[in-house]
Length: 306
Image 1: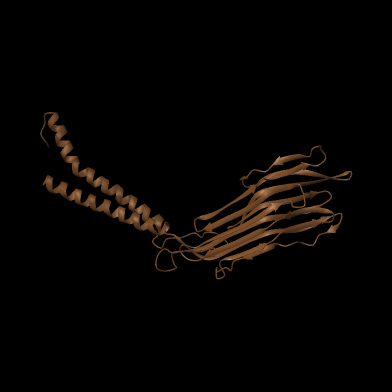
Image 2: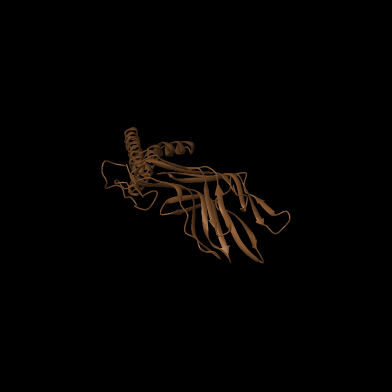
């Protein structure tokens, strides 16, 4: 009888352990299923000025140019644009000038969907009159259902931070600036002093969409206000779950990069039940060996089993 009891306990214990493993796999499966890209946001431009006002009056916005934009269903992918040069002039001041510019964006929908955008601006400061000089300023980004990444590179970059010294005071721009690296400076206009600061590899996220600006100059006044950007790349995807055969197990966000996925089987409930079965199974297996261990202990004490 003891052997039969032990066999039954072992069998039930093994069954409970097997069931716990099956439930865990079922509960975890939908939560780890890959998302599917339902729509995309992708764009890029070379340069543009925004709301610049100074002693010369208000400057009409320049650009953004060249500029490319993806359709939300990526039906026009890929997109690319070029310009032979770029220029932003505010009154007597040269704010930005460059050589060739290339921009592009591409994307796709579905389980392997993604968006990639980039902007490359060559030879900044062709006039020789601007605080920022660089051989190249480039930005790029990529978005998938796993998240967004972005970066910028500034080749041979330097900023004149004070033009009143002899020689002028300069700061070197890192070749691979950390996100939102800032360098501030001043420009002397007669007896007045105007302030500015550049942000390199400027990154911001809104509604799950990542924007990367290779260069963003803020004109801090008091004489001149506004800003201009060179090398912008924008990436974002809106995903829906591919788990299961229907849509009842997923929800998607119209504004985010990723949407939350709720498994139809209820992964939290499945995890709890599998844990309970795991404990029961281990308990049954332990109980199967309990009489044998008791007998051995009694024998060591010189008594037979009761």
